[in-house]
Length: 220
Image (cartoon, rainbow, N blue to C red; front, side, top):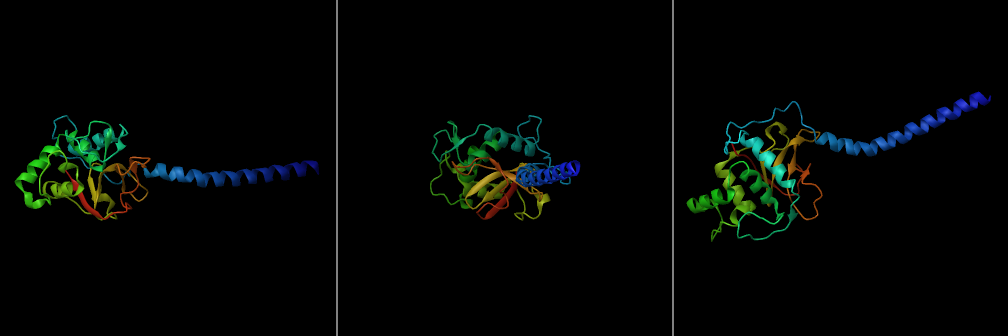
């Protein structure tokens, strides 16, 4: 009888243990889901550009992605400020600076390229007085520039195969770089800088960001 009672207690303990593990699993599942969201989807072949603008042996698409990550690794603080140098040089920045740093590291100086295009094609931009130091850090200006000079792609986020790490993603007043890691649906995460309260620079918000998605571009 004592042996049978001991066995019942043991089985009961196992059931309780399994129940606790299951509950923890659901909590851990959130972390696991987040982890799975950051894993590349094997069925979608990464895009490799045929162009290496800066001649460093890394194609443009990969170079842009790598430099976007290098920029956010510096953990820039969010602040909208005018810089006489154009590019921020004090550890601060905004969303456009993620893109500016990513492209600059790949051989594309947006400060110069955008300014030259504004002077050559003012009809593309809603600018009264061009300012080389700030124009390339405005989202509408960048959207107009990329629409004219980059590869225009779909803004349909259900077409997950059309989105690649290193692509430029533009919303009505925000911009970022698509990651090469994808969520459970296969859509890339977004590398971006949106506010001082932002905890992560790479987030699963590309398809859910609370602004209209107005542009999707690839440099080459």
